[in-house]
Length: 420
Image (tube, rainbow, N blue to C red):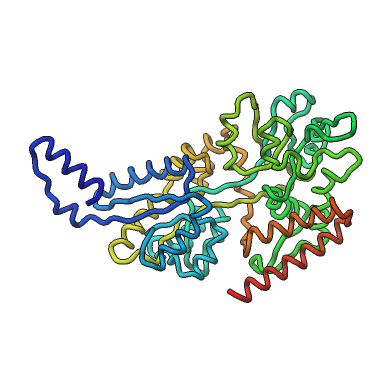
């Protein structure tokens, strides 16, 4: 019996009544899986309650796992005919899930590609293959510049709007001790965090380049634009008066949380973890533009998909559930509860949301954001880490280190697409 049925039975028993099990016997129960994160679980509980109220013949059971175990659990359950009918996955895992036959394409009659192309922010099209979509998000993420209000005021500078202003503000907020060691960075740095996204989809494009071609299968940054982007980035820590240090306080976000960094580039998912830090006064602004106003951003997202386990009436119920959790109503609830951004302009670009002092800079950034189609995100990120390490630890030039990174990443991509 489902929870609803047991609840009805208990109520009837308490009041001396009887329960008609006819409708319950024909009810459909589907499973939804996601990784555990408090706010996400709370938001999904609310969405499930709303959906079940509107669809009393469908019950949705949610299961969640720690992030570290999540992919393993999904990969084991679905081939065995168990587990979720609707599953949450990171957009970068899509190829793996399709190749492993874990998910099935969304029905074109319910989710027409042309309509999705019109209704959703453009980066969602990374989930499309030909004329069909495999998955859709409830929410998306982008990058923005967090700043410490106290440190800005102390240095007498304003939140930067351009890359030149970013460097000037960072220099004003950097502090060193008597031995010349940095004790407070003007801006954080580290390719292990979000900087590899900022460099790839932000700085390279702002310098007039395109990081990849051939649908992200061909590296395209070992050129003038890529070199300019790397030289700007490295210029934060390779200059006469550095404004940051790689590895400062181990993690960039840790330095900002501790009030030891004036500025920090991060994703909208960081908002929740900063909100409750006592004594930290912070604000958000859009990523700095070039002097001539060129902007670019990076967007990532988690999506929902119908698994290959869902068949018959469970499949029909899963389609209905997918329709609801990708609706405008669901996206507003997700923004309010989780703080992640709506995947549709119809929700994100409302006057209230787009002008919100915290969410607004991230939402506005979606209009000029790009989504990297990773073959191996962790492997590709590590190559960017090593690119910077060759410069900081070995004294290699930006041009030489960039060329090595491009060659190594192309080899990684060639191997991946040859095998798939």
